Image (cartoon, one colour):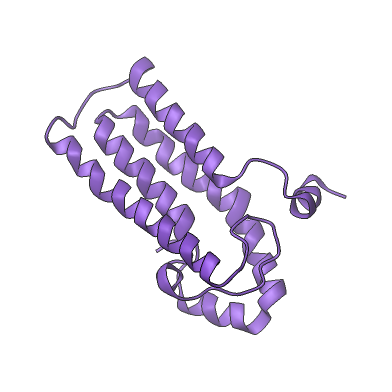
Length: 157
């Protein structure tokens, strides 16, 4: 059994919110230790509240949809329902998109160059560690319904 199979069957390993927290810590550390040039100043740094707020709303809507449909929110656990409404009508992965928007908002708020480096790294991590594993699982579970949804709704936005 590979590590990926073990993680899929046991649900062990860090979950996306843990990666989000680590990314926030990394951004703050980069801002303090290697700030680079500060290019966004007050009051413009407050523009970061918009993507961060949108990210929080996306996550709340997506989580609510999972609860409404009574299916798991945890990666690598078998889903019982293919959720395609609400935030999932906009993005196949609104939670990962929401997390990335939160980080983008924080980077804007911090106003320095180096925190922005964390945003694409986080997005790529979500893509390769979670999305590229979850999507084949969804295809295996939901077949044609998944493929129709996949053809209609983009992966990120």
